[in-house]
Length: 183
Image (cartoon, rainbow, N blue to C red; front, side, top):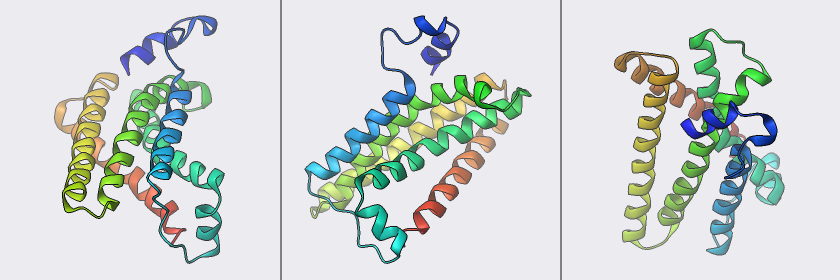
């Protein structure tokens, strides 16, 4: 995340010369996670509503939903940092903190998706391993967000922890609402 912040200070033609741009990294991570599920022959659960049937039977819509689910928490945390620091909340203002979030969200997308592959596998050991990966990733993700909020918004540990939990819970509720459309 600090790397992305440093790159954003460079001139636009000098940014991210050594790596993928953050949004591209996030998109490729989501594609990789989606491809892994496809490679293992895991289909999305049966859909009941018309919207759900459309999404699960349309690869582009399914990828867009994954992008929403994995990109939304980063957007929420980027918005929160701008709000806490009193900076303008617009497209330009969101660019630097959101780009920093893309690297974290991309890694999280891969790890959580691998965890779900384990959970959906019929073996009990794979299910336990998948659950452990998801829980471990969640703890890691929250720890990184907590440290990032402390640094970016110069918060003390307890307020940063509370805001991390609130922002994560809120973003998961929004993602859950999007997922509820599919039931």
